[in-house]
Image (cartoon, rainbow, N blue to C red; front, side, top):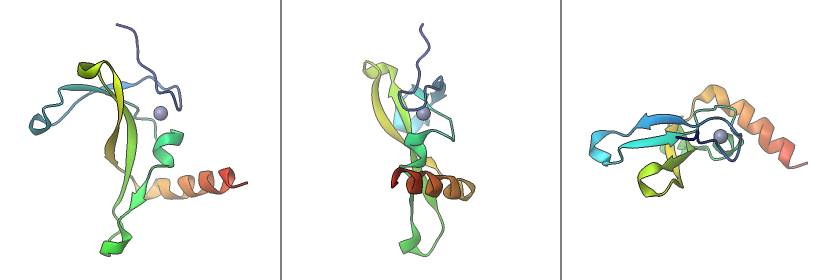
Length: 92
Ligand SMILES: [Zn+2]
């Protein structure tokens, strides 16, 4: 099978087996922490008083003709600075 690559960062997507309760089966996920898509999709649940940050990784579902979707993923606080720098850069 051809390797799938992320259209945002061109990293090779990694095989990932979804949790059994999701019924997803095998997925292909961009695990690149430098992926622009991932870095710009993060959101922090500060309104709940915590510092829990989540982001969306680019993913494809081979069971659905490799259609792309957002895979909710933990977003480490250590990446926040990088994401912020990226946002500032894109603002000019
Ligand atoms: Zn990517």
